Length: 487
Ligand code: GDP
Image (tube, rainbow, N blue to C red; front, side, top):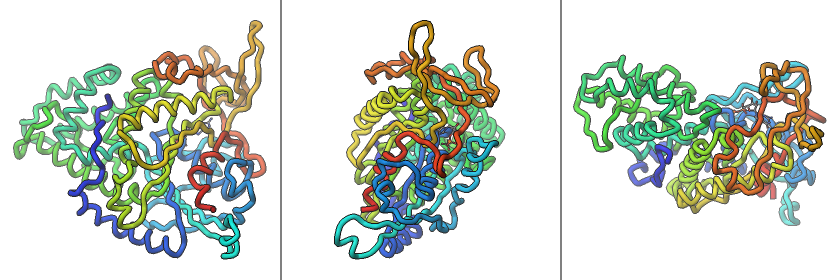
């Protein structure tokens, strides 16, 4: 079980006071929404899941067009014009779309810099509505506000319902079982030397935070690939890098511990509470609670390759995420402002690392993972869809005959420094790679049998063709997330 599972409702009565704080953003959304319809699309996923690449490819598709048959408004020619506009929230950094396109273009092209904090981009679309009446009313215009934020921050939301002592006890308990245990040695050694009743010492708090963060980072590495590792800002600090707000860590205490004034426990508790009230709550009310649609990108392939623990932890992470999207969980906000997330897409990214014969299988595996997470979260809420996609397809396919056997391979240019077994790639030579097959029975993939069996390398990004990058099923994702808004 992940350390922070719980069916806590994210918004409760005591949060109404905090809820009023969203008024600035929420009310202005509401007022402007009356004049110009808008849709706020949240894009999230853990670090390296593919958020930056997804947003860049999606915005580029809207601006430049391309082959997107399943996105009817675009393929049917009803979207007549799209352009970028100044974003509505002056306090948010702008998503660096142009910089990312530049990174992905030309001979020296490379993958863009990944998401490390929240950012936003507004794209305005003009379109011809479907239907006689609507058509006679003239053309439609909609603002699409894309909000990119680290999934690590979303996994912090359950902290709003936990005391410092409860969080400490759960986190320490989880670190005492495999696979976390193998990576917790240094932190456990430090933990055993700290007593919560000793006098508060800033140095203890700082070194605890450093050693605890190093433990979280080890649990996140590809070969372990755990997902539920809050506090999210420890791995993804955003603008809080080096801030005293992050100078705390769990202590080895029982969930009901009461800390005495001036003690190390009291100092850690105060910092934890400040983290929740200054970082987690404002993120929830200021950004998350104002979204209409959400895509959660999942690097399922890395988790499957890392084994059962990683897949189980992913399931727990998705269940935590689903509690945030539960119908009514942000009902105070939806009552006030008419906003609520009504569609959520879970998407397994980088499907181009597999042969197309495995794409449906990847989708089915994610379906089972999400269905399990839905049961755990006793979920009933927004419409949920699942997809396997590649926002930018870096490979093509080929059948290779080897020792009388035909292997369905993918072909691309592995990045310089990538290696498979004894083969090292130079960044210029194409290679055909047999990545392995996913089993047709999704349950088989979830029992850890794939551990270490898939062969992945990072490929050089492809050049755009007629302005757009090749992709896998990006159009289906766009249709689900945005299609109905162009009716
Ligand atoms: P973020 O941390 O969620 O913003 O992740 P990025 O979008 O920066 O993606 C992380 C890395 O994953 C990229 O640098 C690419 O190497 C890889 N990646 C992301 N999307 C794709 C894709 O569609 N196909 C392939 N082959 N690789 C991808």
